[in-house]
Image (cartoon, rainbow, N blue to C red):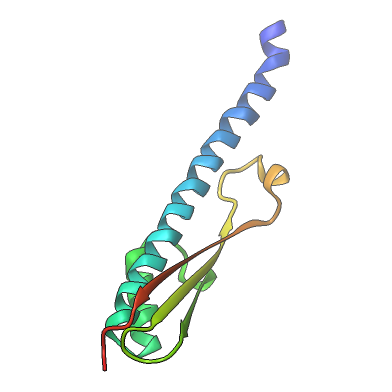
Length: 116
């Protein structure tokens, strides 16, 4: 009898842990995309190429929810910063009320421009 009363709570906690694991994976992929974008931005002046390389570094993310911005200052030797923002959808059923419609996350990486 007690197990039947506690089972729904245990199920919700287990599903919430699965969703948190998916969000952590997405966060790591967003950071990897920012690093890959900064590496490419250091070598390429074209923001389209930077965007494509950032997407390629995070293949499990939905490209529609990924925003890549490149911020350059100066010329060769000066920093270039790539900022990646992503809204992760809640994929696990029965726990969307805990997380809301989506979780917004972002990361940025800075590298030195090497092209002339």
